[in-house]
Every structure is written in C-alpha cells, then in structure tokens.
Length: 420
Image 1 (cartoon, helix red, strand yellow):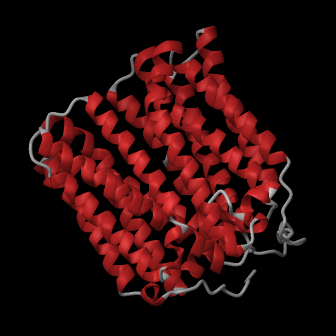
Image 2 (spheres, rainbow, N blue to C red):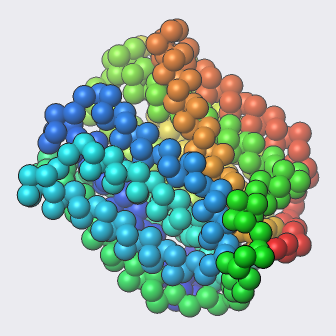
Image 3 (cartoon, rainbow, N blue to C red):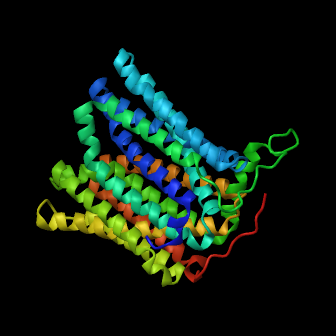
C-alpha cells in the first residue's frame, strides 16, 4: 500500500490527512456529546435518545437533496465550508459551558446541524476522490483511507472516555472543533489531478430542473443499474444489521453474558485491529475475481454476526465467540466496503457521483434507524439474543441478493455513460 503511486499524489495525501484528523475528532465527539448532556446537564435517557435521533434524522431527510446540490458545485470548497461550519457549531458547546448557557436545546441544535453538514462533507468526500486519483488506483486509495480510519477508531475508543473524564465533555468537544479547522487547512490545498466537471451554467437558472427532480436522478441510476441496485440492497441489509446490533449488542453481552465494560473495550479494540488488517489485505486480494470477493466477504460478515447470539454465558468460550465475531466480521466487511465504494466510484460518471453517493447513504442511514427500532422492540419483547438474530437474517439476505445478481460475474469495473 505504501508503495502505491497515490502517495506521490500531493492532493490525495492532503485528503488522507484531512480525513484522518477529522475522523479522530468526530469519534471523540460521538462519545463527548451524549456525556455533555448526561454529566453536565443530568439529562434523562429520553433526552440522550433525542440527541442520537437529532444526529441522524436531518441528514437522512435531506440526503438526496444534498446529493443533487453537491453535483451542482465543486466539491472541495463545499468540504472546506462544511469543516469550518462544523468547527463553529462545536465551539458553541464549550463557550456555552463556560458562560453557563449550556442547554439541551443547544446540544440538539448542534447535533442536527452536524447531521446535515456531515452529509454534505461525506457525499462530497466520496465524490471528489475519483477526481484526484486515477480510477485504477481507487482501491488503493480507499484501502488507505479505511486503514487510517481503523487505526483512529481503535485509538479513540480508549482516548475518548479519558478526555471526557479529564477535561469534561464540553472541552473534549473542543478537540473535535480544532480537528475540523486542521482538516479545512489540508483540504484548501487540494488540486484535482483529473478534471472535475464544472457546475452547469444553467444549474441555478429558472429554466433548469428543480433540485428535487435532480435529487431523484440518483435513485433512478441506482434502480436501473443491476450492479448498483444489488450493492445498494446489500448495503441496506448490512446497515439494518448494524442498527439492530447498536440496540441489542451491549445489553446482550453485559446483562445476558455478564461481561464488564473493561473486557468489552478490549474486544472492541480487537475489532479495530481486524479492520486494519482487512484494509491492509485488500490490495493482496485484488487479483481475485471482484464479484466472488464481494460475495465471500459479505457471507463472512454474516457468519461473524451469527457468532454473537450463538455465544454462551460469560467465560472463555463466550469471550472466544465475541472475539471471533470481531476478527471475522470486521476485516471481511472492511474488505467488502473498500471494494464496494471503489466499484461505485469506478462505474458512475462524476456528474452523477454526488447523487448516487447520497442515495447509498440515505438508504444506509434509514436502514440503521429502522434496525435500531426493530432491535429495541424485539429486544424488549423477546430478549436481546433473539433481537440479534434479525441482524443475522439481514446479512444472509444481503449475501443472497449479491449472489443472485450480476455482481457474481464481475471481474472488472465497467463505467456508466456520464448522464447529466
């Protein structure tokens, strides 16, 4: 990976640096924002749940429109603006804490604003990569970004809690604000090495199609292309499984299996290491046929998911099942995700990239929200172990969809015709 030509591309190095710094801060805030409500405001579980919803729902509702809006504009300035606005939003939390004006309402506004800006940044980020990296190197680039994310995720699991404990939650959020400023500086220097389509001159005129009709173009492209449609359905299945896991996993392993938080933290860290190994192995696996590789990784992810509800009570065997889940599921899904997004970036024209990426993201967030609701309801009615089987079934269905689709026969990526 380190010998790849992408590291001689200064624009990619800047994008990589920005993504690494920004993700580190974001994962800190993922821990610190709920704790700002819990510790500083003594918030109720309902209030904490409202923050979680505010952090996902606005981006989900506006995702398709954001995709069309991103396709109307150059991506780099949007990413810089999103970073600067996110920094300002987060800075309001420690300032409010210092002045004694920190409220639940402010935290909800910050969470909702971050939700929308995160969508803008992520859609533009996925869309700009093919304009600065040759398509033959997309897998290398996505693998490098994934490897960095795995390292940051592993480090942030332990560091986030300590930062909240040492500096209080509002000031831990300050670190995230600074990270977005650093990210904006890196992004400002990016120069596209490939031509990024300029926004259409008539895009904002009275005669142009409405942004809502343009937003639907991404849905139509995904619907009409059998490969994209199958990948979208499988990603939705994986997101549904992840949402179920978010609702039921911690309750199951803590209350049903009896594992403490210290042991769980170590197991989660192994998952981060597994993801890193998956990212590093992606290039070595590139000689395999692309379609079978995607299907095999997704199937391995289903096996990993099944190990959790199959785990017996706490002890060496129970811990082995949970560790097995992390070491099977995490690298497999990482390899799948790197190749899946590379396929998407490789076959979609740059003029549609934002809308297609937004269509994928909206489907995944919607499925995750649905999975969280299903997991919570099923867990309350039938127990956490039973709820986790919903995620396993979703992963199996995703595998079946991939196997039954043209993805099975893919060896190379065939670009779509660019369509405005």
